[in-house]
Length: 193
Image 1 (cartoon, helix red, strand yellow):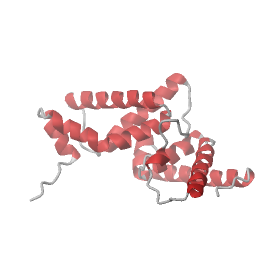
Image 2 (cartoon, one colour):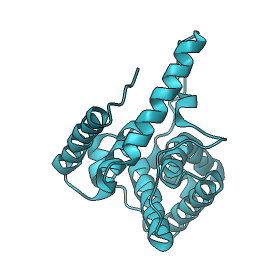
Image 3 (cartoon, rainbow, N blue to C red):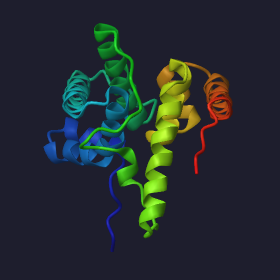
Image 4 (tube, rainbow, N blue to C red):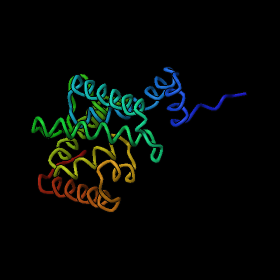
């Protein structure tokens, strides 16, 4: 008989009852999504790791103080904390996030590909670089929605809750982002092939 894994709320309850492994399971379950979204905002591996640690320290602190409510999903709550910490970082440093790869990490490296041809791989890499540059040229609200939707794999409902705008606003920002990217491709005569 296969044992059904505990859901997030059950893991939180176990953790609050003294089971440290329950929190470890919660961390393992959501680490990749939360870390990746932080990294895509700050574009610096060590800074992303620092913010990620701060996020989980805040989560532990909130859980231990009994201030976590069960209304939403744990991952949405954790993503909101990470998003707010990234926003705070940029407010303090007056920097804006960029969508660009570093020497050590590129989101496209973790995507599955069936291409075996070296030429196709080069073309694909160049295409991703062009798209990242176009995304980076978008207004901040549009860039944010693109990052959260396509890089952090969040639903529009999750994006609207995280950014505290309506679903229609989030959808509108994505629509305008796509329109602006198309316009930039036409104006700059960018070939994605």
